[in-house]
Structure formats: C-alpha cells, structure tokens
View: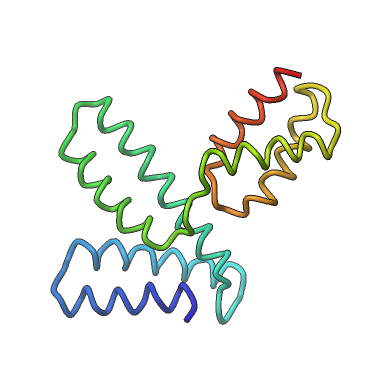
Length: 150
C-alpha cells in the first residue's frame, strides 16, 4: 500500500471515528498531495513525493511552534505540536546521531574534502545517502563541524 493510500485510509477512519482534529490535519495533507499531483501532472504520486510534502508540512509546524512560543501563544503552539505528531507518523524513522556521524565521516574521507569550501559537495553526497532519514539542518551542522576540524 502506498503512503498516499495509507493517509487516505487513515483520513476515512478519522472521519468515521468523528475525530475532527485528525481528519482536518489529514484532509489538509491530502490537499497538498493533490496539489503535487496537479503540478506534476501525475495519476499517482510516489512515496518520495509524499514524504517531501509531509516534511514541508512538518517544517512549517516547527516554525509555527517557535513563533507561537516566542509570542506567548502556548495554546496555539500546543495545537501545532499535536498536528506535528500526526504528521510524523507518516515519515520514515529518523536516523540515529551516531549513524549520521558515521555517514558524514565516510563521505568526507571518500570525497577528500579539505576545507569548509567543500561543504556543498559533501552535503549533496550526505543528503543522497541519508535519503530523508535525517533533518537537513542537523546534517548541515554536523558537516560544518567536521569540516572546520580539518
């Protein structure tokens, strides 16, 4: 079963259970997936496209949480956190920090990176290997840290 089908199935279950919160989050997510279908003129979107849509939505939730907490709107921040929990159910499992560190070190050695100027090339290779299993900001920070030690 594709990820899109799983989301649609969970949406129907939330509707049947009269879970308005979950159904509204999943409804919005389904609409965003449909936008990708229309933009790319596809009948069926790949799981990678669905994951990228979910990651985009999760990033927006993270940003909103930060802004709401800074503005003293804890109630809205908690709502966004609940939405984020629902979205994270559909993302692939995150890679451990140790695994990510090993991949960064391997890529730096393989690419013979010598300074921070090689960060773009290293980032491209690392992101290709982690394939959405790690946060891009965490990867960037780790690569920068390792390259600055060289």
